[in-house]
View 1 (spheres, rainbow over the protein chains, first blue to last red):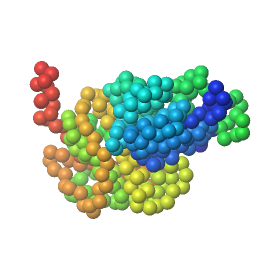
View 2 (cartoon, rainbow over the protein chains, first blue to last red; view 1 turned 90 degrees about the vertical axis):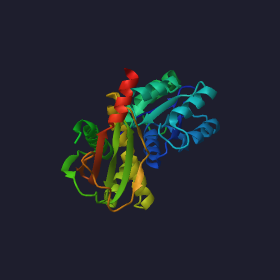
View 3 (tube, each protein chain N blue to C red; view 1 turned 180 degrees about the vertical axis):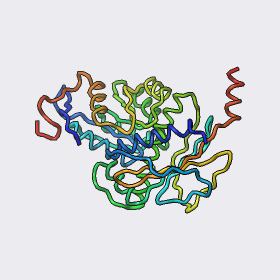
View 4 (cartoon, each protein chain N blue to C red; view 1 turned 120 degrees about the vertical axis):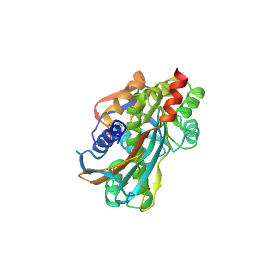
Length: 148
Length: 165
């Protein structure tokens, strides 16, 4: 897999922490692999919207990568609840269902961005960088996985 | 055969398979299905209800599914029934999601049921109202079969036209 300049938190230069939410084990594994190539750390995983909310409270990640179509509670509702309780939460929707209505609804409910599946690592990397803004720095000359 | 309804699924399957497996794909055999569908390996069926009605079946033999699973997970995985089923479901979800995106942006409104395991050896027969198209996508990792039967829901469109008018 392609390597990227490690994304670190500006405040303490520690790896960005992620919560990965998807009902598919494969999708979670795949995204976790990508996060590793971005120099990030998976703080938690969830397979449905309800668990995502409790995992957010427990882990307080920097970024949530959230699927939409899931059992029990869908991703958009989970994103809305997380953002209602934590306005600073950065939720990126990651779904194969990317029609305009869906994207607009997700953004209205508090999601910061949308990435369509199948996920291209370079697209996800840029979106994460954009969403984190000044709260993250790309470690110059350091590929993810190398010691900082 | 409503090709305008089916084309988005073909395009989506082509794009998702190429991206997921990081290889080129080729559409192999294409046939109108007259007899009941005969399952090839592990299959997922997805039903669609709304302005468009029908169903799509994705079917992979176990060896192909194991290779796809390894790509999806980014590492080698086993060949257990759970892994195979999860692979077929995830692939089906991604393809359907992409096709739905195209159709929804064209103004069609419908609901997609989550994938179900299609475990019967033989599926239901197609009919005049809803002909089925079976196609095979050849990839370097094996073949993926898609069986698709789709039609307009006239009553639903008439209801929407009445509401709009």
